[in-house]
Image 1 (cartoon, rainbow, N blue to C red):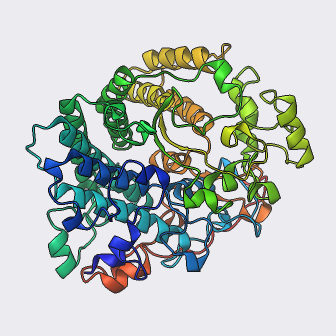
Image 2: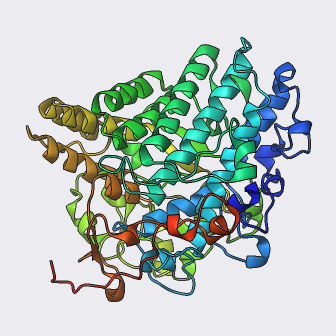
Image 3: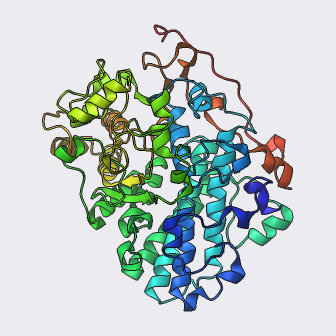
Length: 541
């Protein structure tokens, strides 16, 4: 199998990993592609070249129409931020209209369950091109090295490969528990890549893919811990684009949560908190738009965006254009992102996060006079999100250079609470959850339960609010086997669904290009395309 089929026929692997953004180039002393082995040879003797390879991997989180190509002119093809918006748009909490200005209308409508849909093509392409870049790095890094910098970079490559396979596993098959033997995705590493190129690669099972994910997480933690280095020790510009030890533990905590490894998820979340050099946002800091600066004290990992990156110079082909209510772009001309009305009504008035959204009168107590006037002038509809600030807080800016959050420390507190409850201590978990929310979000918050499922549901409620718009909500629905229940949420009537867990429409199909180019994979091995769901009425249960 030619590896180009993982990226789409029009894009050879080397071409997709070209370095184009400022934050790639300011740390890379060479103008090569990170996947061209002959150009990054001998990195063991030159940590700067190893850093270049890893910086190139992180650069692949963001790209402007790099998977489908500029000729396709698909403005949702913006790297991992596009995947975040796509998955959230398939769920219940990120509400938007199906309009000509909404590039994620297919996800809102859930008519993207086909082998040629944009969403599956750029999900597959983004994840596997980063996996291939990680594999290329391994071929030039000595796993037995005693050099702390090389150990640190080995940890990065293992961690980012785990991140990609975790994304793929949750997208192309149902959640881990109860589905261990089902077909998942193809496992390709530096060890089997040559054989795969010649003979193709079948889908591995869910259990096999998660085994690979856990092994990569384990090695990421091992190497980064052994190196005793922090990202800021090796890179000056926006170091949180690299994995710290805390972020590596955080990634494994996420994986263990999905696997229902409660004790391990709790231990990893606690280790992430203990090793993190920062803190959750205070109530006052959370009581205003933000979430666009990778240097924030509560960010563990993020996508670094520079003003010279193509996603920014494009003007409108970027995350703030699609998501930022205060930025110039698709939102401002009608593709507003709103919150599920049911979720909004469930947030107590004493919770500072209620102000992350406009109320039924299009007002938020979190906003300055200028920001509120901007909402009125632009006729923002009720329940529009105002969580995400514009770049440098400039209202209406077209310089959409906000960084993108991938992991925040607040999530670790929520993982710890859920894992503790499900592991057998719901009362202790309730106390931990109350302590966290009262300290950082709602001083009047109250909750208590001795029933583990009740605590899990309350944590889910907190996750829905806290992590709104950050690309995790759909995967929570999947791992918790929740229905896609949009009744009363504010969606258009024709897209108001109530889809039960296990429905085929919840999974993406593997791209058709994979069937064409992979000798060990055929149409019979793919997920089945599913038709659009049937809408329900607002009163139907």
